[in-house]
Image (tube, rainbow over all chains, first blue to last red; front, side, top):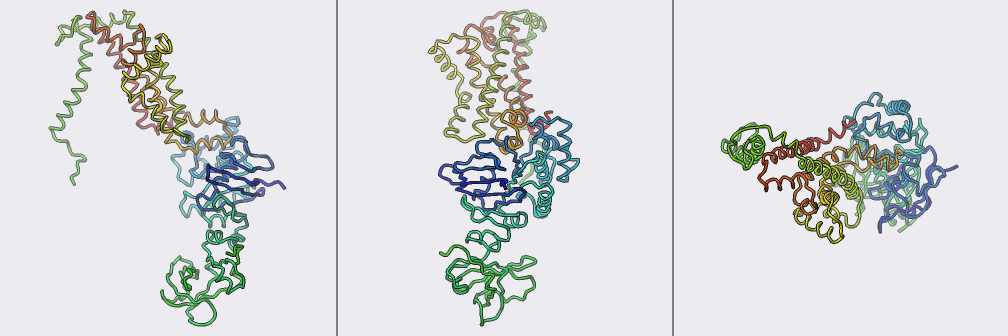
Length: 332
Length: 271
């Protein structure tokens, strides 16, 4: 099967800066794919390489089997939803959405009809006559989405699509994007620095750091079985455990990770477990996050709200299931 | 702290402001009055009598028409050149980063900061060196040097305000470079160009110093007026022409001012 997007040893260097460094990547058709990473990790450059705004310094990119190097953005069957939406302020909403069809020479009646349909798809029917300046942030984003989808792209690229929205709107949009993607069957590639967003929306996630992909996998893979300290730490703030600590519990001298929710905290002062001291509590609503100090090692535990807790500064005993202790590839 | 909002300014300040404005504008009104005087050899105050005959005299003087036509042609062509070069330059400076960008930005603005007499002498010696005879085109060239600046300044400010991702969005949606310019860039900078173009036109229309160095025997309106003042013959004709010049330059400047003042709303409604 041909990949929707395929990177083979792709690099993009800006002078001495290796924004993207020898990346291999295969995105399957119809997949909802997330590129996750901190800012400056190369995820946005990868997106721009697919869109055609950047050309690779080395390596090759293909989109549905066709070579993409040297093909300008306007000849790629790929559309982008920009982070700042990039709507055209001098055109009304309907003309914004119809823009792609207009430059391709589709007749006025036909293209406005298609634009109207695309607006219904993003649940903004009847907004065509307004100016982008008269819309809220969430509405602008829907227009940007409609403007991209009206061209029936093979791949839709989304650059931090929910970054500028407030929390409630964001959660709604997450669900909507996901159901939209299911209905349309288009390959969605989206860039985000929010691990929650990546885990909840994507079929697969690629975690970027320093221009390289650290790990690609399903959200469960990434969350439960991080391969490196960076992934464990970046995706869901896992407890990263040094090899000496891990050796005591697993017998192997390797770095390990332990999810905060896998740690149980009791007030016992003796018995099996890791002796620690409670140094802080952080009430989060449904759960409480505990900061613990185990002989100089800072750990976090997540306990359900309402659990009886010892006072801050007191000694506690930590226990966890051995199988929850995940061993990473790194041993030093 | 004392709030001055809604409160009237002190009387002394009002009088000072009024005197300042009168000082600026009374002399111009004086020029208008002299256009109607019956005394033709010298400017006498008060005018011994009022007449409108000078309008007819001016209308029938071929040298006035020649000067006016030359000025308008020079201004129009310098402005056209400035619109093309100024926009291209502004686009390059605001869209891309390259070595020497700031230097180029400064060099483009320099002609308007430099005294006109320097520009004039420089151009004159350059023309002489290259054996280029003075003509209509040497005047145009001289004027274009400062017209480009005006257009450039307007365009560069607008380019900085338009989001760069808009151009990428257009390309992304399938528009090539020309379509992007036609459908996205031009509509967004149109009012800035119009305003810059009008200012350039007005500047060129009343330019004296650079013109004296780059014109041969031809006379633009301001040069013609200078010559007229030296010869005491039908003096009020000069004043009639002055009135026309004031109108021709003031109207575009006013229009340009209104366009750039609330450019955002206008930029949206240009359909």
